[in-house]
Amino acid sequence: MKKAFLFLFPILLLSCNKGDNSLNVIITRVDPNCNASINLLFLDIKTSDSLFYKIKGYEGFDVNDTIKLINLPDDEYELKYFSMLGDYISRKIKLNDGDSKTITIVYDSIYSDNYINKTPIYNLRSGSSYTISRSGGCMASMTSSYTIKREGDNYYDINKDGYEILLTDKMKKAIQKFEAELLAIKGKNECNSTGMMTYVINSSELKDTIMDKTCNWQGFENMSHIYFKEYIDNQ
Image 1 (cartoon, one colour):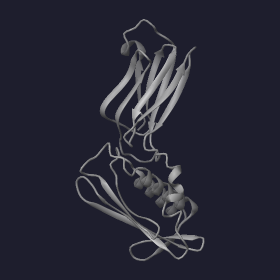
Image 2: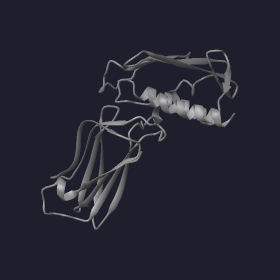
Image 3: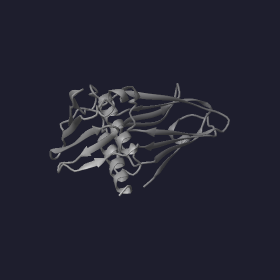
Image 4: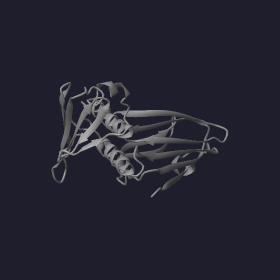
């Protein structure tokens, strides 16, 4: 359920420099239908000399929750938050003359364009196949995998019973995005935990083991949701 958190400027800042600008910060995720909480470790909104909003330590948000700041003075603001890859993302926002601006944070969006042409599905040759498996979990061990094979221009998902599902372009793109993000998170280790997932890539072009030490990356879940929705829609 979408919520709005309204913060009056005079309450947050001990100053007589009041303005009539406003700023909305929407917290969302790649898959808006996912009900899992978005846990931010750090976020603040400030100017060069004043702090207007701050969270430190995990705080949960629902998809499309909105932080609303009103009565903001004319100034340049910095929005800064800790990403799931373990680095700080900073954005500058200029407000003046009654501006009302909206900034959207897609927390689980990982820039992975540089890895698209390195993914197993991109490099799969006709007559070949590959498998990606994952295991791990906090309360109980979870294991899942998928196998993709190519015949000419067609790509198939082979399930555990040997049944082959012809991939649509949308399915293929969802898998490719997941694999690109998986390669992008390799070596990121800011949110190490005992419940981390381990991914094993086994193909003729690439053999690798990648441990997910990010801050709650949901790449596999996002891919699965798009995949199965597309599969059902095409039945």
